[in-house]
Image (cartoon, rainbow, N blue to C red; front, side):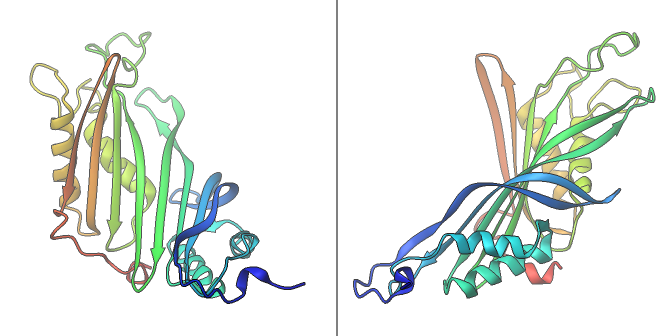
Length: 258
């Protein structure tokens, strides 16, 4: 049977993106406490299509993914992109994965719970490579008084902090989450959040600035973008900052992080 998709195309028209989307796929993510964590990801994979090809076999994307058995880390991410670029004869390769990540939470009262965080990784490989890691961390402010242990420990989800980073050196997902929660969670035993104002008022601007100061001091991060959203009923507010500014930012090759 002829491979029509790989035949030469004389129309000289480049296709910017061709690929597969919304693949539900079991993956193994790195876990600081337990080495690995099994979860299920939604995967998007795509390449540019040079003008000389009519198309590409979509099954090849899945074949490449299967070669790595769902083992997702910084090194395998780069290798998958290299494999896509080589086997599909593309100038650029891209992959996005989104997955829930679970962490145990130990409270001062000895209660153990499990928190869920939505994580995303987006990698691209062209003449240079790039990888960003996104994490959504819920914000749960404490009640005005935490003395009555029969009461719930928070008033519910106030909002969410969305973190997007480029790394200079390897960082565990847990450590990124912990850094955010050091700002957005109550101080142990005090019932207050480190960034709240004297009157107990929380603002998206205040949380965003406090997080920005925290991450700007981390030498393992080369760039970050933070968005803090307050999910109030009827009116949502948000604040965003990026560091360094776009004109100052430089991409760190993924291979230098490994």
